Length: 354
Image 1 (cartoon, rainbow, N blue to C red):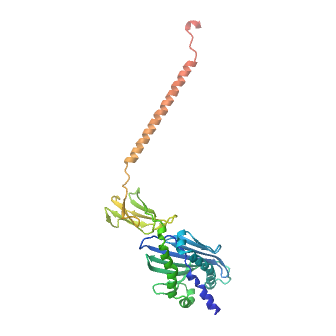
Image 2: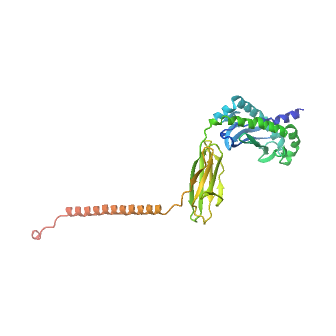
Image 3: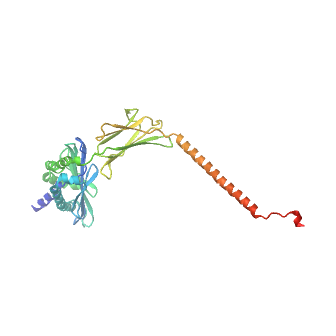
């Protein structure tokens, strides 16, 4: 009886939820919340335990075993969730440390002495499109290898390693998919919806866009379209040639990445074939803070007129400098000769020499 109770308690950390940060106030915007729990220890003791949550790739909250504090990076998110909710989650994080120690003790089968350090990780995420729940995922890893998870399509647990097979019946009984769905609704979907009501407190920012080109010595042209400093995250960048959409070369994208100030960054590139001079291209940007899609033309190929003018200017400066130096030298030379004539004694007349 005590054995079953211990195992039942070991899965109480399913109730945990990280606190997120930024969320755009668009009516239908896609957002993902990811929470990662990491426990490091031996089969005898838990050495470290942390939780990190992120929204759309931006870290929003952090918990560490050392100080047992749940740190939230945005004050308005704390206001949206409430002090009681945050304290409740902090307490669950503290209590969950024993659950991860249980995982280390039961899932590490090959460490007989129990002296080596091992890592158990738990990922938990959910995805919303506006108000609609799109998908969720749960999975564990032991020492960097996936151990088990939930198949959302078939709604049952899946053992990813042979060592996990013996735990599968236990998971199906103690924590079936029906419970997982309930916890996701209570601890992920509803908090996200609550935060969205406060999203007006987060100022939306349009993107700053720059378009450049690079002409290689081999004659190939590469185009760059860079958008940065925008919020919310959702944005579209695409190329047009002479106003027409198409695939004109080898396209690449950096993906939407977070900036340090919680805004976002995206760069797309287009490498053109050698026969394409890169004329007539534009980068089209679509974002919720732009009333209509905005077109940014690609600058033309740099001409040789400007470099030629610079070369001529430099030559003129060099010639003028040489002339000035020569003039100064000539004056010094003339001055030295005149001084010598003044200092030399005048020759005596022939009559005085007799």
